[in-house]
Length: 319
Image (tube, rainbow, N blue to C red; front, side, top):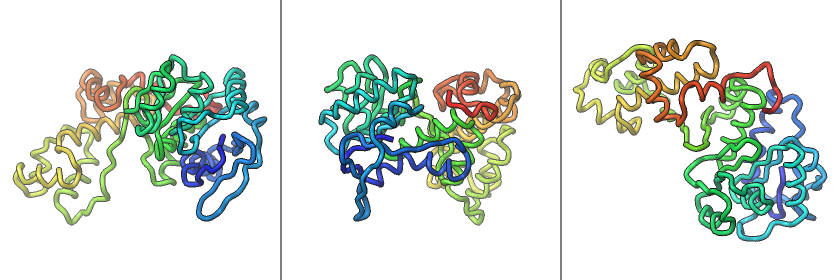
């Protein structure tokens, strides 16, 4: 993890906190996490504290994964030449390199993003495109995994990218358990599209609409019509739709389809069931019926999703 002088502890926690917590819970037993100074006398600050970063750039040259969280507030400044050289050397040796928020500017300055898709914080995306016209900037997404080079937007998108990387290192099951321990959404992969799961509030079972939502979640394998939910809540369809939108923020039918797609994602990750059977278990009549809904919500076909995110617990190495 490469930091520059004045780096904020709060910002850094989005970058390395996921890996630190994974190591604490035993999910990455071989992890050797090092905070590296990207320039001489770099110090991390936060909460009235300030401490110098002990590791130097030599650690970058031998790392398997290098993450640059940010480049202070002034994204337009030129990164120090030694860190650019170290990043190029690590990348040429085979390391994966990631830039978060304005850290994407450091990767761009090193030439690692030329003719590649990349993202950054939306507030500085236009500046990135102006300074580095060879970079194909897309500020709409959470993060982009372009194989050996990855980029992410600011804040929590760094956590999302960290969980995505841990999926590749340790498998989907361990990544999901880690997300559960951290009380964050388990799966927000972002590439060419934002695949964002829609969590629901903790149901108040005394509310008839909330109770019907909890009931529907146990019956995603059947084609439950919205009229059945309204009937269960002892409400007219019109009043039910209005109250449902107040609680969830979308129409009941839209929400039901999305929940079925999320269930399909989970089964594609954790099982070897045929896609046709998964479709039926999620309330779709066939894989052909599932496919357009899956593409609309996730951005890729079910088989492509399985190839990318299926549990690889027997291969803990980074792919």
